[in-house]
Length: 248
Image (tube, rainbow, N blue to C red):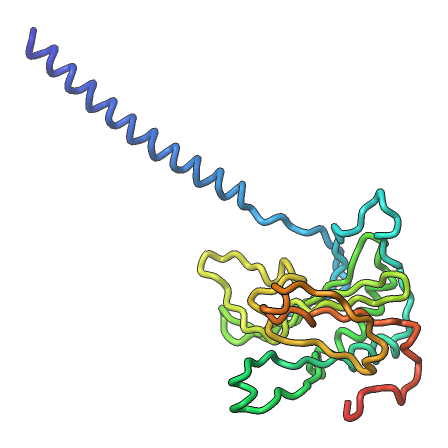
């Protein structure tokens, strides 16, 4: 009898240990699920204006617009002549940020158009339509990409909105090589306004007199993010075909 009781007791210990291990695995799994749910990236509501396999133009909800504060609403829908939108996009240039050693060895970085010819043609047409459809609580976002490999692509992304007589243009990424992470979460297409890496570029607009200077923090200055947004006074943008950037 004593041996049988010890045997049964030993079997009970084994069963309890097994159940404990199962409980540990279940609790770990629950913890992982909880963390995944807790860290889930929210999807920004949007309406598609244009989309193909590698590019899109959308209207996204702008959480900076507060329903209880009317002045925060954008001046949308906004009807703009196609030639004005094309002129604005064509007059935006980018210059890469350089440290002093790069400037000493390579010279000052040149100003280059923000958009390639095919990107310019796409955006200048679709942004007109997007602004005309936009609601006061929406902003226009764009995503442009050129696949390099199955896991890498060169992206240029950003957004814009009209506030009063000012057009705010933000460039989130400019010709950045984006590699899709091995775990499959794709951020660049989901959040075109957010940079996928330190920006390291400056935005310029011609004529400079049509831009409104903005204040920036020391942190933005250190990260070369001080000129990633242009605020353009639309009252100073004349519908004149001769007002384009020379050489464009």
